[in-house]
Structure formats: structure tokens, C-alpha cells
Length: 261
Image 1 (cartoon, rainbow, N blue to C red):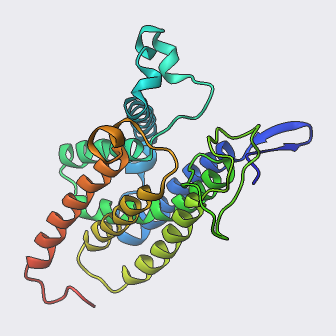
Image 2 (image 1 turned 30 degrees about the vertical axis):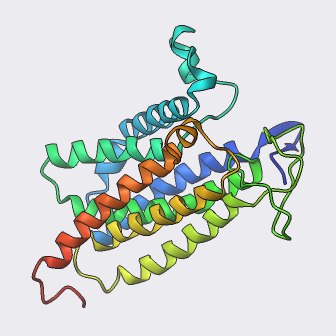
């Protein structure tokens, strides 16, 4: 694997590079999907800073909470210690929560059709997540459990915080492949489904379910896993599943003979 490499004498960290690319890809896909679905593109571009700040703060906060044994004194070390760390230390479910929080507040405050936005955001996330998960796979940010199967991969011990000496499951790669496949399938289905929200909530349901199962093979248990038997990510994605099921049931119960074109 290549957690880092040299380019013109400069050390480039693969996860940081792909994280930046995936963030740009996310907003590019949001722009394109907004045009396709019928959303004012200025909504996302004009509020990009709020989405970024909320996603950053909550992704860091959720990570700190999940790893509280190591970060219990972080808030006593000064304000900047929380924002500036020696490693990335982000939580995916925290970033999703932060983004959706801003989306909910802005759509409710402006009385916008939230289901259209869910379609655009969910599809854009899946498309961009493919890049981010590839980076997490290369950089070792997502580690699977140790395995003796042919699927196992090893990381350089001096560049990745890997507690295992044996090969581990390429969990990040599995997430990347699943995200890309789900994006392609749902993007095509969106061209025939006429009810806003169905594709978006279906994407949330399927991705959250996959992540919920995938975390069972994670090689990095957090504080919550030892306390309640499930990681903070699993708890968060389980709640997203409940939300998706609730809204999908409402959408399918709504009478609409033109639902499928």
C-alpha cells in the first residue's frame, strides 16, 4: 500500500490527497445533479462554507467521543488542539451528521422541497465516497480485522498506525467498490423514478446497512463497542436506517400513479 509517496521531493499523503479530491468531486456532482433534478445550484455553492465547517466540526467531535480514552483531556489543552491534530482523526458518521444538520436547517428555514435535496446529496455522496474510500484504503485510515485469507493486505509498519503484524481485510476497498456500484445503479434508476426522495432515502438505507455490517469486520474497535457492543458509527448508521425506512414508507404510501415513468 502507499500511505505516502514522494513527488518532486515533497511527501504526499494519499489519504489527504484523495480526501481533498473527493470533497471537490462531491460538490461537482452536487452541481451536476442539481441541474438534472431541478435544484438551484447556488444553494450548495453559496453555503459551501457552512457545510464544510459543520462536517469538519462534527466529524472531529464524533471521533473524539468514540476515542474518548485517548482524548479525554483534549478540551483542557486549548481551543486549537481540537482543530489541529497530528493525524486526520475524522469520523465518517460525524461528517454526515454535520452535513445533514445544515441541510435540514436550511431547507426547513427556506421552505424548500427537502426530498429533492436528499436525492442530490445522497447520489453525490456515493460518487465521491468511492474516491475517499480508495484513499482510506491506501492510507490505512480504515483497517479491517486480521485475516489469513488471500484477501488480506499488509501496510508498511512505519507509515500506518496499524496494531496488527498480520494481513488485514481491505475494508476500505470493499466500501469503495460498493459505493461506486450503488451510485451507478441508483443514478440510472433515478432517470425513471418520478417521486423525489425515493432514490435518496434508498441510497441512505443501502449504504448505511452495508456500513453497519462492514463495521463488524473492522480492526479498530472504539469505546462504544466495548460498552454497548456496537461502535459509534454503527449506532449512527442504524439511526440513519430508521430515518430512511420511515421516509420511504411514507413515500410509498403516498398515492401517485405517475411514480414510475
